[in-house]
Image: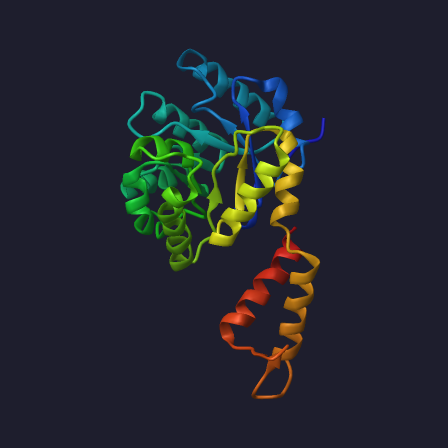
Length: 276
């Protein structure tokens, strides 16, 4: 069996694809690890019933014990399962996705207890409003958006992009201000509708969400391709960096002035190539 390495903070902050696998389905762990996703998230929350959570923790511990690693989605603070989930993550030194993250002190407590990178999953109105404070916390490397749960709470249609624009924009702005990785967008539930998946991913990327939560291995390759820089973007970025490295004090490419924000965008595109 091929073992999987622990996802580092750097990997988590730049990853495009995050694939969920239920914690009570250990026979799927290796398949998920081999599906090509940048990051595998073993789920202890929605995908696992209350009665199955203890067994799921045992399955995860056994899989880690065989030399594997992944991110663990733990149950929200205040739930009956949260403390045991945190203890597991601490014992395994596993990065965590914290479900229904909404209070900075709760996120900070998880980061301190586990000593590992944390990705808060923001899926409530309160969470959106506290995102700037959450993004600034030590140990937080990125923020993910639980679009469906958020839409349900605020009474919006989860497919209505205008209704969720404020939330997505808040995540992107807070992440940029805190200097952490760009946000990870929520799931697309249409498992076999590739056109829908592509549309969702490209829309979110235009707002600044450069990762995607995936719920089926079939989604991974499409998402990864959608979030990769295009050949045109790569060529543009390289032309910008070449021009910026010249000795000329006034630099223009294709009739457009090249200033610091333009150079920064070009650098991000080139960095995305090297991290892919």
